[in-house]
Image (cartoon, rainbow, N blue to C red; front, side):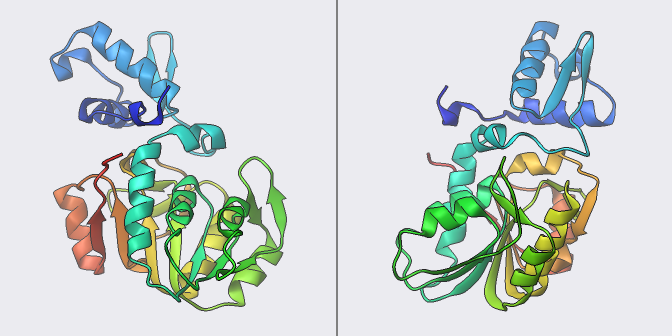
Length: 256
């Protein structure tokens, strides 16, 4: 199935929100029950909710989607976000890049950059930029998580703490409506916090599905970042939180 077909409609986004909060009702949308069932089956296939006999339940708050599923989910939007974020990075910059499929899309978009200094705990990111002789890349030591190329643990945190960069480019697993930044794994959270502390400007890359997910681990809040790059406009309430935190919103158009 082509990646660009794996997108969600506004109705499907609302189904995910309703399932998370109170379940769903076909009459809420004014469409046939069969249409909602098809939507639920589709959303379950994307890993956005769990379908079972008689209904659906939210996805886990304690375990992330499989890496292969995350690579496919909204890949066109992630590509657009990655390209937009890459355009914000000048040549001859220093930057952290953390774990995630969206930050990997960002790394792919650095093709036309020159003389970058990159520090990462993402094995896939290091591989993506390894062919550039003018890129100087530091790969954090630590424990490799084979399923997604993450490098974690005390040694990784120590490596990340040894640098101070102009930019920190991070992904996230979930964002609360009040601006709380969330993730699943404590080791990932510790690495992300280290990157945030040691970056002069923090760019958060998050597609719209992250606003419907509620991992239980807290990374921080909007005051910890400088720029949010996403693929759809945010709610008025969330925009107020961005304004209060002094965060610049960038909406990357998906033309893929």
